[in-house]
Length: 109
Image 1 (cartoon, rainbow, N blue to C red):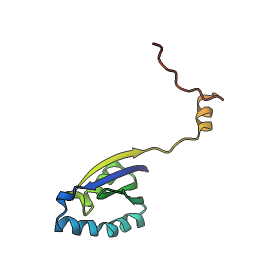
Image 2 (cartoon, rainbow, N blue to C red):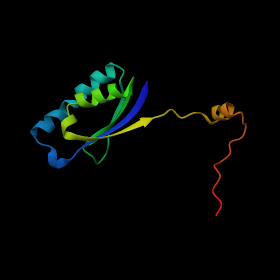
Image 3 (tube, helix red, strand yellow):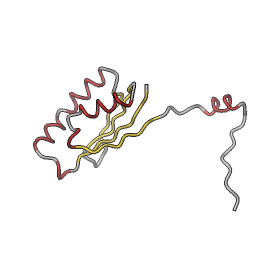
Image 4 (cartoon, rainbow, N blue to C red):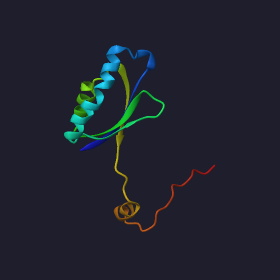
């Protein structure tokens, strides 16, 4: 499974009756994805028309399909960011065989 943060937004100038209807149907669409275990969380971004959704999908194609099926797809712009689990520092040390974390070195001038 892969996690993605999807930021979607609407431009206020493009919000006509069809876009408003699409926005109002997003909670029902989200509920279906949550029930299927494909959408972990959804948030409203303060000061924006849109939201931030965290998807947990099997493939990039699956995510693309979910975005294309979203009611607001034709009215929105999207930014898709792949997410990675943060590894505990002690696990990094074990993997490298080191017991000390060394900060990155700065190039000499």
